[in-house]
Picture 1 (cartoon, rainbow, N blue to C red):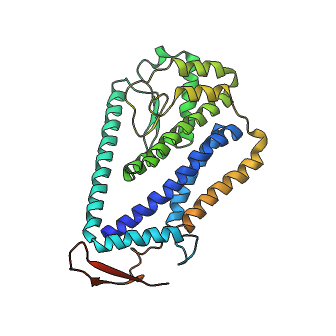
Picture 2: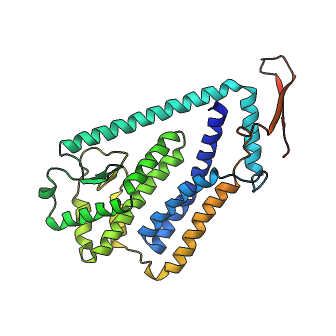
Picture 3: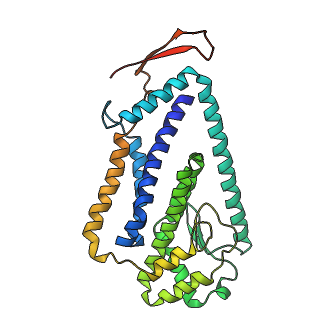
Length: 314
């Protein structure tokens, strides 16, 4: 794959996911208050839908994208004027991806080592066959009733394939390491994921609301945290005050099923449609769109050299 093709794909991916994260960050709190944590967590489905929409084929010239087109043409003029810039950008990006993957692998390896020593968990680990792991002192640290609640919480993670979604999020963080918005979004998504699981457990065991909250207050972060999987408690991604507050102030949404279905479908379809319609023109990938790049003045190879880019109007 050519450097310009790789940069074009990266540009689309970053644009689509940034848009989706901004929408989710803006709506997650109002949705949690109006419909409850379980349904607020579902707003994050807009991210994969927007990503798919960004790569769906579109008719040439469709969509409200004149601003994006102007930016894309300016960026392309810069890259074509200095082709070596593409190679430098790709090299920097690949170095960042490699470093982030190495750090993630190190953290996961350390976490798995602590699991073997009985010092990590409770958590869900494994992408092919997710499983629940607990520390060696799990039975002595928590009362039998709290053990039931913790296991119920982790079973919700397994039912929803949260470990696999977290692994995908970790991969996107590594690929888009240069975008702080992606890191903020992953952190917020993991918090919403925990709030949704807490709400599901409270729905199953409403009489244990106080016991569950006390379990969160008394629990300590055990061992290292992995970027993959789901963890019962982690100061990195599970702010305790937010979780306790959500348990104490449950927002009911049973009576609003119809409104929630209409709203969620509108958001998901809208996210897909906006990402699809706002695709920048694929000047780099479409080799027939660019007719020629010709030298127009100045000393060749000098900073003052002028190049003209003729683009097919179609």
